[in-house]
Length: 212
Image (cartoon, rainbow, N blue to C red):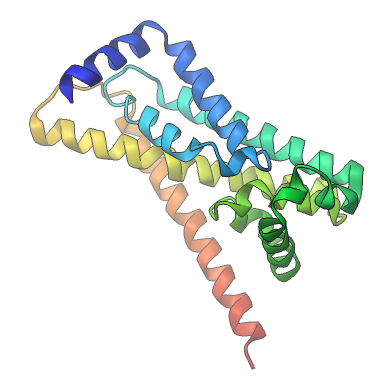
């Protein structure tokens, strides 16, 4: 494993821009309908984020690349649905995935605005809810007002686990690592936990309100 990882780490160290581009494309493609069901974007982001503690990549660069790709992907899908309306849900290539489209519509109809938040953490409908929201008439201001905070929480939830895990490994094994990320990690972790707790609380409140 070490013989395999060493060349990868050396390559990323020499070409960090390529790693950031890969992160951006992974987040972008994961947010596009159909492609999002095929591209393992979350796995790529988690794997590359593990290179932050060693200094091969910068924490803020990884977060920025993931956030930018996700916002652009979600935004493009939403505008496609917004312009085409419901016709796009039955057109190719969406017509090849009627089950996922139906799930996305049901998810959106059930949760409304909150569907945009929750769907960020529910594959594979993550890639279908933005276009569904646009097709079903959600306003752009409302969509982006919910989507951008959701993407921020999603990026933190995908990047921080890899960073924490490798940081802990470095500490346990006594390996040298850069200290620039550690100072801000706890702040980001608290923010991520707060967003997750808010989502769970809102979900429970809505379920309780709907129960007889």
